[in-house]
Length: 338
Ligand code: HEC
Ligand code: HEC
Ligand code: HEC
Ligand code: HEC
Ligand code: HEC
Ligand code: HEC
Ligand code: HEC
Ligand code: HEC
Ligand code: HEC
Ligand code: HEC
Image (cartoon, rainbow, N blue to C red):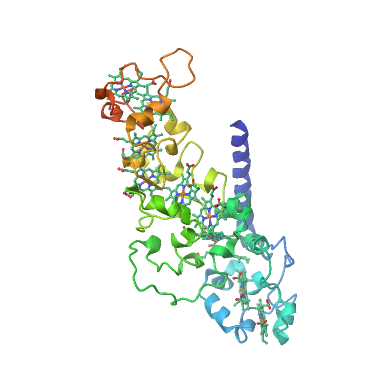
């Protein structure tokens, strides 16, 4: 526990440093430091074998056209990026020699590169941000799901793949399922995720579920596709359940009488996050079953488990939350009556 805390503190410091470096790099006249690969640290667009994106236009019209809609293309016009490598060459490396005669051997190609190497290219710029800092600690990285499994490097063909029926209603996927203009994603959520994680789909069709398929929320509200520290890449801060609290703020308190597991084990001690055949997404169909998984031992001074109720288990006590109403915590009642 303490170790986790210490690591967290270290990492927070790390992220802060990272952000500072990111900002500093943005201001200095140094080029963005593509470190791990063969790109030079300092370069002027006209120097060191660089020619700029316009030189690629004639021979690679499609890539150029698609790319010109992305936020990468806009960097060249931002003053803090002046004199730094932007455009095609920020990923593909210096292109002067290649552009002269189109020799494919004279440009960095990603065609047969392993996914981790492509991701490293992106991370030379993106690793400084908290959202992506822990990409190399995530399950996606470990399983060779790289940036370009989810993002298209140049932007897909805008306007193609329009689905004939579109039942999605919110901003989360007002986009067509098979295509996205948002964050240069290859397709919009949740289709993007379900394409590989079809095993979780049934839960979202269960009688009680978070409305992800309906477009009210998205997978990335709860998960960070870019990795992180939490189990299952959730956006939960340990014990705090930050992601759930974002939308269910009333469950956070502050309470004078806390129900211990809400803070110690978190929401998923009692709820299945995706969906369930039980009302309130509870892990058990009858609420007393849920309570008694923890409250089963006799009252015993010094017992490690929470005490079982003194009152008997007659039918009148079956529906525990009929009396213990404020089950997430209370300001007035140590047994959560109000
Ligand atoms: C004179 C035309 C021409 C210009 C200008 C040009 N290219 Fe190319 N490029 C080619 C040809 C020809 C190929 C090989 C096509 C193939 O293999 O299908 C190629 C291939 C590529 C490849 C793929 C390499 C591979 O085979 O995997 C990349 C990446 C690339 N070019 C990037 C660029 C960039 C970036 C620029 C601008 C700096 C640029 N090109 C400018 C003609 C050009
Ligand atoms: C953000 C990084 C990045 C930028 C910027 C970028 N590319 Fe690429 N490019 C890639 C990656 C990664 C691939 C490998 C294809 C894949 O994984 O889908 C690629 C593939 C290519 C290919 C090979 C054919 C293909 O589509 O697979 C060409 C040609 C190409 N890029 C040209 C360009 C040109 C021209 C520009 C500028 C207009 C450009 N790229 C800008 C990352 C980039
Ligand atoms: C030269 C540095 C650099 C490289 C290399 C780079 N990016 Fe970016 N990228 C940026 C900057 C700067 C932004 C704009 C600020 C931001 O959103 O973080 C950006 C924005 C983005 C966005 C947000 C797009 C949007 O519409 O908001 C995505 C997604 C992205 N990059 C993915 C990638 C991927 C994938 C790669 C590798 C194939 C890559 N980037 C390589 C610098 C870079
Ligand atoms: C498993 C799929 C997946 C992978 C792998 C992935 N991304 Fe993303 N990325 C997403 C999704 C989904 C969003 C949009 C989240 C949202 O809508 O808020 C996103 C958003 C972004 C953004 C814009 C939001 C922001 O935080 O500024 C950037 C930049 C970005 N990704 C870069 C990257 C880079 C760089 C990599 C590789 C190191 C990468 N992504 C790998 C799915 C992925
Ligand atoms: C290209 C396929 C692919 C895509 C697209 C993809 N994933 Fe994954 N994801 C994987 C693989 C492979 C793993 C590791 C093996 C596993 O646990 O299933 C993984 C692991 C995960 C895990 C951790 C599971 C665990 O047991 O620890 C979560 C959570 C996750 N992905 C969420 C998402 C979300 C959210 C998206 C969409 C933004 C997404 N994934 C898109 C392939 C993908
Ligand atoms: C309401 C928040 C929430 C949403 C929305 C959500 N997840 Fe999860 N997901 C979680 C939590 C929390 C866990 C961890 C469950 C546990 O520890 O018992 C999890 C676990 C997972 C796992 C690990 C395997 C498993 O079932 O335990 C995968 C894979 C996954 N989610 C993918 C997705 C995908 C894909 C989407 C979108 C279609 C999605 N999640 C939407 C909260 C969410
Ligand atoms: C993006 C916002 C959002 C996040 C994040 C979120 N929820 Fe929800 N949750 C909702 C909405 C909206 C509803 C109710 C509407 C519906 O049926 O989808 C709901 C419903 C519920 C319900 C059922 C309520 C009822 O009356 O049946 C439970 C339990 C629940 N959420 C728990 C969680 C847990 C646990 C997490 C974290 C793993 C979480 N939620 C994360 C938005 C969110
Ligand atoms: C000790 C078990 C337990 C834990 C831990 C727990 N809940 Fe609940 N929760 C319940 C029970 C039982 C109900 C049903 C109450 C009822 O039937 O009136 C419920 C109901 C809900 C509801 C729907 C009714 C309402 O009061 O709005 C939401 C939303 C909810 N919980 C969210 C959360 C969130 C978010 C967390 C984590 C911060 C969490 N729960 C942690 C047991 C728990
Ligand atoms: C994950 C385990 C867990 C579950 C499930 C759980 N509890 Fe608890 N509960 C605890 C712990 C731990 C305490 C604190 C016990 C202590 O401090 O001695 C506690 C405390 C209480 C208290 C305060 C009185 C006391 O003994 O301190 C009541 C009342 C209570 N729980 C009722 C319920 C009810 C009703 C349910 C079902 C809706 C439930 N609990 C589900 C673990 C759990
Ligand atoms: C008819 C109302 C009612 C129902 C239903 C009910 N309880 Fe209680 N519960 C009480 C009362 C009254 C107390 C004693 C409160 C006090 O000491 O001030 C109590 C106390 C408790 C305590 C604290 C330890 C103790 O016995 O003093 C726990 C734990 C508890 N109940 C769990 C449960 C569980 C689990 C269920 C469902 C199986 C349940 N209760 C159903 C009324 C109820």
